[in-house]
Length: 311
Image 1 (cartoon, rainbow, N blue to C red):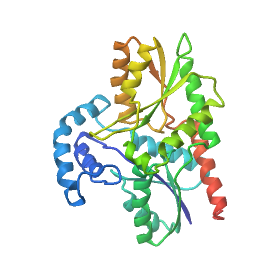
Image 2 (image 1 turned 120 degrees about the vertical axis):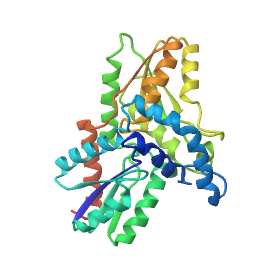
Image 3 (image 1 turned 60 degrees about the vertical axis):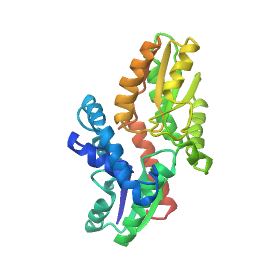
């Protein structure tokens, strides 16, 4: 019996869950290395204690929790309907955790697991860390498995993004500049060969072949003192204001679901910043349960299962 497992980061489902969620996040050395391994948790605890109050306030502004788990669940249900096969959820940093879901899958009689990363562009800090946890847990369950770790230029995924961008452009009286805002990474990751930035640009290049637009790329959500990918979205807003750009459509290019980085960072923080700079900033709708996006996921799963001769 085949089971499909959607992999994502997860998110706090209440304000009480913010602290343990952050503890799980900051304990992951694939994302951030806080000194030698034995000091990771103590240093993480200090950082979390300094940031906790502010982070809870930010989640309060977007409904008191992350919508990502509910959206991912809705994506799973839509995909289940499209494929007529049971779809499971496995999260890296909050419930339902990947090992728990795999144990459930085995009880359900699943013998072959196809894991699909919901990060379109591969990075060791996102997909890499999540797949590492998945592979350890699936081997413990003794199930056959395969992973889909990147689909940054899948044609139907690109069509889904083009559709959202075209809808967003219609919301302006004059054609806006399109700003692709991706989650940032330490520059060191890219220097060591991480393909994330290259795949982000690959996604944008595929979109640009289908859509005539004036576009830019920036990176958001930097944390810590090390050098991160540039330009930051904050800096890009200043650059665009200097170019006298008045209309800006922001596309959260590395995300497929709404969460704190779209609902707070873009919709509140960057929108207010842009307003102060004289820029009318709007954001494209996230893919969430867009029918075209669900079709993309369905095609990705079908293609892989055929390739594996699992069908």
